[in-house]
Image 1: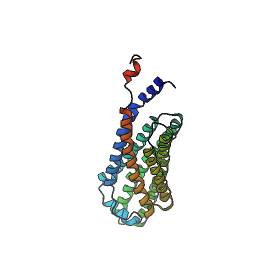
Image 2: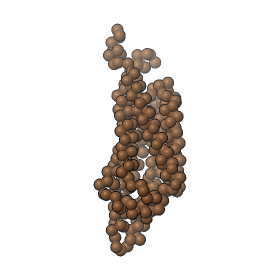
Image 3: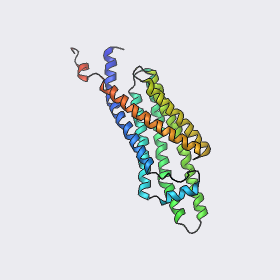
Image 4: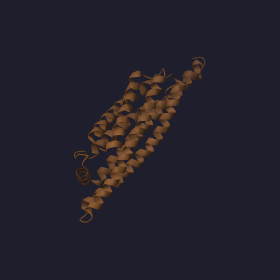
Length: 248
């Protein structure tokens, strides 16, 4: 590969790097805002207490919180996919494709999760809370909807494992990557793996909630560091006019 080809390839990555940096920060902010709006005082391992808290939450606040969470996940996935594709190298390109496929599956799973948890579950707990008859049946129905949401939450965490794992390995395989960011991405993937398995095996157990918190904090840290790295990487790319003019 000639120097000119290498520079041209670096330059074509600049728009993706800048957009990826913006989406990384936006995703982190939206996730934090959505999590803040979500009711979280009752013990999630006690469904009756959790459902009472969910029913007391305003419908607009509930839906807004879940839409913000979905927007945050979308920002995270798109940011990691875009940033993975800006890393030069054949191995990095292969891992970027893995990240893209897993990211697409993750977005579809996140959308389904928010439809179940952000719309269907709220409707069911409101019916249960306001009912005077058949409360046991309505509670069981709400619990079934919640179990579907837990399953989707666990699968989403496992898909995010692949997304961050691909990003971390792409960084490790390329000269343009940074080892510290790669390690952070791999640590996020590890925490997400523990989170996904814990959710699938035990639902909203104490271990799962601890893993959710750890993976969330690591994910936000990875996004912010990745945003800083990608913005600097894009800004240090050569000027397109230098590439177009052979005399420069």
